[in-house]
Amino acid sequence: MSKCEQCIIKQFNALKSLTKDELVRISACKTSKIIKKGEVIFEEGDTINGVYCVKDGICKLSKLSENGKDQIVKMVVKGQLIGQRSLVSNQSANLQATALNDMEVCFIPRSEIISDLQKNPKFSFDMLKDMANDLREADDIIVNMAQKSVRQRLAETLIYIHESFGVNPDGTLSILLSREDYANIVGTATESAIRVLSQFKKEGMISTIGKFIKIEDINALRRVE
Amino acid sequence: MSKCEQCIIKQFNALKSLTKDELVRISACKTSKIIKKGEVIFEEGDTINGVYCVKDGICKLSKLSENGKDQIVKMVVKGQLIGQRSLVSNQSANLQATALNDMEVCFIPRSEIISDLQKNPKFSFDMLKDMANDLREADDIIVNMAQKSVRQRLAETLIYIHESFGVNPDGTLSILLSREDYANIVGTATESAIRVLSQFKKEGMISTIGKFIKIEDINALRRVE
DNA sequence: CGTTAGGTTGATCTATGTCAAGTGGTGTGG
DNA sequence: CCACACCACTTGACATAGATCAACCTAACG
Image (cartoon, rainbow over all chains, first blue to last red; front, side):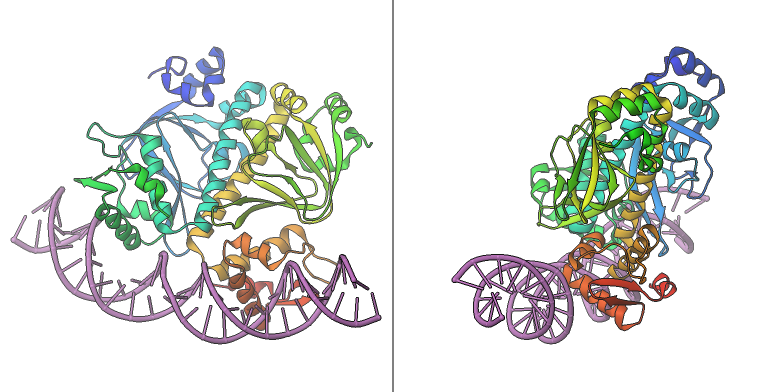
């Protein structure tokens, strides 16, 4: 099993602020898991008892509503942590995490991390920063949900994915989402998302290569009103 | 000027985890302000350079969207802090804070608080908990926005206000909001909010006493689909 | 091959946004 | 103290984005 103190992934999250000793200790009790595409890492109500550090792959955090849809709240990629919120507040998960890719994650049990949070102020300050950032994004999403049209939200989602998660060599979005996933991000019916996407295609803003989407005119997408 | 170490308000927020010495130091450099109803404490883009501790009154945190509406994201009452997010991430405010009442707040400059955050792990852990809580609420709001009707959201808003902020002696909601405020919380047009409220009234779930709203049948509100 | 899941399109229906008109209360300046 | 203006509120009529239901298509996969 690889060692946390040598893991480059930690550069991208709060774990970078742990001391070498702390990392060695964590390394000793962490477990590494492979998660298949589509598999659920944890669901709403689960007691997670630790955090996951995503070494590879992508997952979505979503929440089921009574009407059966699940709203995607955030996407998490390589380098980020999941489960911090539950860890800190010591509550069960309020979101479900589902792999969108095959993933590789490390699980660090609660007890280890909590003691570090309480002893290493740099570490907890870093985690605070991450959470502050998530909070800001969440607030922005609330405003978008309330005030923008499906068309606008979908355009922004495409731009966001393009800019945050990058593209494949052929220029297609590196993250492959189903039409239903897109609908669940913008909070609309699948058919509506489909219609808007084909509209974008007709207007030349995007194209499709197989199942993949390629953004052809990002500025046009930005101009969508 | 009153002293932080003796202030009972701090019980309700992360400041309770500061040591007596830290509180004395903060007390020495804090400033106290009276803010009139309707006044803006800070707006989006402002560099706040500190946190506000709400000693009395209530304010709304909102964000303006391009179309001119401002979406209310959170309401803050006596005992809570505002500006933590910006403080931690060292960014300008992404929300506007507006007093809904006459308020009394203490302003604590950034430099003081930051050093405590970096030295006192109990304090930063407490703030982390607060922020984790905010984040959870924000995620829940996203899901509600995406999946529920205006009628449902408004019903839930009334319940939320009733349970979180309490009632006056005559049973009316202690927080007085305009119809526009209600609309801006649920993210709808003012006229729509008005219509739904009068519907609730017609159905006997709420009544009005002057400008105040009284919840008559909270279970019926809970049952709103 | 048949079966299945995802995708697409068309035809409605409905919640909600928008515009417009009218009411009542409240404060201000003459 | 009145009249005016202003603002929050209310209600009606209408327009429309988006949900829902249904049919069908295509590709993957046993």
